[in-house]
Length: 115
Image 1 (cartoon, rainbow, N blue to C red):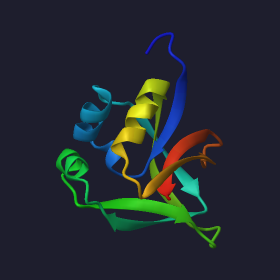
Image 2: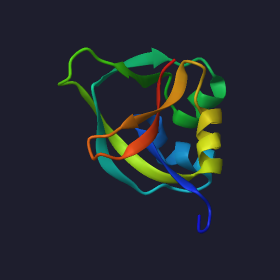
Image 3: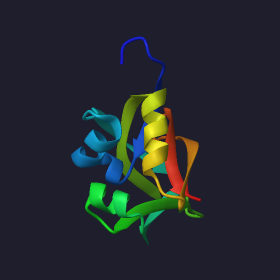
Image 4: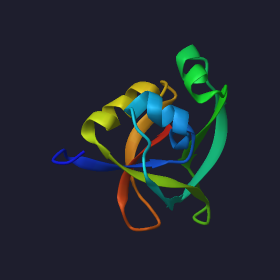
């Protein structure tokens, strides 16, 4: 990663799994605990066979903005390259869109939310 531009990616779901990281990025990511204030989490059914095979799960978590300011979604924030961010875009199905959010730590990170 040396010399490459890096970005923060927040994950509350399958991008935290070792097998998904190896498949998507070719390496394990080092993350630290953080949270997204003002969001709530639910589950969606994924139908993409490649994503199901990689994650081992048919139901994946998904988040959306909440009316309750006390809501927050816990997860991990990872430092990744721009190329790895594009790989994460390829992994995520059409139910998700990528936006930037301010985390509880004060950092701004990319995250996948309900499209």
